[in-house]
Image 1 (cartoon, rainbow, N blue to C red):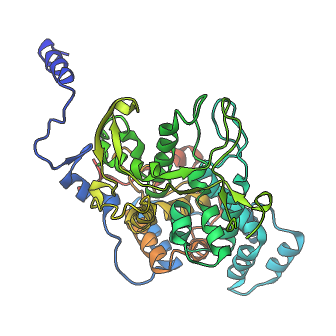
Image 2 (image 1 turned 30 degrees about the vertical axis):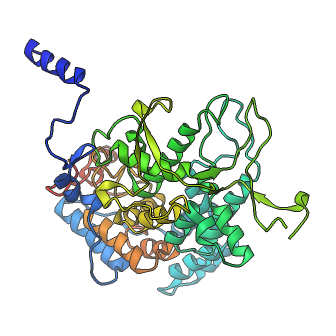
Image 3 (image 1 turned 30 degrees about the horizontal axis):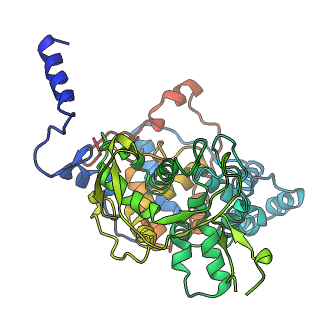
Length: 450
């Protein structure tokens, strides 16, 4: 670089590397206008219900524009194996195969899908997909990697929720604030809400004395909340404003205050071996203490409070206090009560945002086809891949919301397409296919994050 440019950069770093854009419009790595124009943050489109045929039409339009020839339909023996592995993780039984091959009606494949969705193995198969997203483990992750007592309750709850097709917005909300959302409900429902917060409780622990490093556990939870539900790398703002996406340090510590106002179950660590803060599932008065069932879960602390910024992520260098609130780019709604942590509001903000529906339908598509319409499933921000089929992604997300966030309905919608039922082999040469345009993202437009 020329010496004068090096001098400019040196002086800029010495000033603390301030954002060169003027005014208050900049949020993290974007201006307000850029954030408002980003494709991922747009409202979902209105329109008629989406059908499997509509999905095929959108795909076929792209194939025609790129002079691509689709593969022929798959053989029925291949189709039943594909569906069985997709929905249950197991090969079809000989009886299932004979029944399907003998059924020559046009509705045979739809009936097969319904039978597989009713299989008890469905909840385990698709629950495991979700457990991968939320980084489930039976150990804590700190230097002794201690077992997590009762974490299995959360794992089994995930399997059961998928099996009974719990609406995904409810499924997500319970994981964030189930203990609060089920207050006043019958004991079994309240216990379920507590168990669901195991999602937060299994956040990784760090170091030798995990109490001293709890800020890193909160970072892990914020990181997974952002990537898992919204496709955003929110935790990048722990030490500084996000360099690319509209998330600043104030946003990070606004969410941090919500989590710091919650009490996480303690698994024990090297200097403190005894677990503590496991959450009772029934009133302690309605049973002797040794018999009380507990969950590895999260509940509110007695007093909620705002967090202070950690200068460059260092919890020993505290800066200004940041009120608990939602991300500024999405409205910055405040937590309105000090009697709760704010997780109840956070659950509503996340599940009500268009990103939430886009991210989960993209995951469903990827788990069926091997690759999402957005290849970077955890990053819908400026550094992620744009969607290969933007209109299809938006219409899938809108249909998901219109249909009440039902996962099983999305299986039926996707699996009944001609695209899903095509053979794996194509007329295109394999080398051409690997580098061909069908796998390349759509060109960025003026509404893309850039």
